[in-house]
Amino acid sequence: MSNLHPSIFNDVIGPVMRGPSSSHCAAALRIGLIARDLMGGSIDEVLVECDAQGSLATTFDAQGSGIGLWGGLLGWDATNDRLADSGKILHAAGVTTEVRIGEFGDTHPNTYRLTLKGGSETRKLVALSTGGGMIEVLSIDDVPITMHGDRHETLIFLNQSDMSVLTLLERHLADEKLKLNSHAGFTIVQVQGKADAEILLASLKGQLAHLLVRTIKPVMPVLAMEEEPLPFLTYQEMMDYGEQHSLDLWELAVKYESARGGFAESEVFEKMREIAGVMRRAIDAGLAGTAYDDRILGWQSGKFRDLMEQGALLDAGVLNKIILAVTATMECKSSMGIVVAAPTAGSCGVLPGSCLATADFLGVGEDDVVKALLAAGMIGVFIARQATFSAEIGGCQAECGSASGMSAAGLVTLAGGSLEQAIAAASMALQSSFGMICDPIANRVEAPCLGKNMMAAGNALSAANMALAEFDHLIPFDEVLVAMDQVGRSLPHALRCTGLGGLSITETSRGIEENLKQKKNV
Image (cartoon, rainbow, N blue to C red; front, side):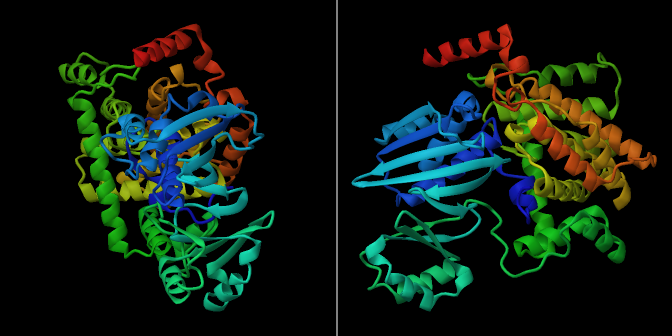
């Protein structure tokens, strides 16, 4: 199970980012930002250790973990136009970096172990990339601690001689705002909430002057819930709420995210309109022509567009327009352009490719596009809660499969279908995606990723039409999610974005990878 209260803009449709992979690049950048705050911005040396049995052992460089992590340590945003050169810029700033692969017994394949030095200070940070750019901090200086980057966090470091300070802290702050994290006689006091921490530190300024205090800023766009209750939690609660209030899926998404993020409903709608704009610009950027050195596929969308317009391709109607938009989005991503992870960068072509291209084909307005994306986001919330978006955990069914289910619901919404039809479409699309492996060629998130994005978008279109025609999806959506998670976790380790199986280990794939390494070294 994932986050009990996923946010559409945190967990599902987002981040807005550059880089080949949200799990590797965007998440690593967020971990880097937290590490930077942990060091108070002063960093001289960084050691990154990754488990030999995990995904990072084979994908750290090729899928952007390095450029993301170094960018975060520089304090950059995920859309920074210098991100591809973050390593060079970090080294030019006097920071030395080292990446080691070893046996650590990590149970999660995307575990980052950082040792950071700055002046006379040394800190350790262990964190996970959990899929789609989401993160979790597991420990600081070997002290178990939980952080997801969605709160203002103030950390106060205490050793045994400082424990009398705890009485002062507990006197000034309610228990739910104060967490004590201890290990081997050392304690990190965790204060959650910006206002509470500022009041606390101001009132105890003299008593805390000799202690190390660090403020960790949130790295997520939507902060953690405080007291506002959600209108529904489970799938069945959502269906009952929708029936009771006669709401479509997109309207349920607005209700949910408004409560989850503390936004006005109109603000949720406008935030998604901004996301739609980023998606359109990514398609336009891909069609305009792209180039990037560390890349295995060239610019292909332009030729497809020309042949489509000349009538030289098989007439597939809206499907060809979907293929074009998917390709353009993926090419934008692979050239370090700005895309929306929806739900991941590896599957970023599916949702805009299917929904935006179909909207243009149907001639509907931008409000209808926003509604489709919101509906897709609501499907993603349940996937995030009950399964995973991480290919390292669930294979490509977690990425392109999830995007297909989300897109199917979005397409039904575009067509004016009902809540029940949108859910049926998502169910059928997900059922058809089980067992999709993740075996990137040359460890790049380009191929067979492009083909799987195409397949997922076509599957979404088929599932949407089947649902609109009242085909029976048989297995309820919530049961599909349980089965999806079980299947994904049953896939062999070699077929879950490790570069150790499938097309990844073919002779040609290894040759392409070696050529790219030699080109980079030159």
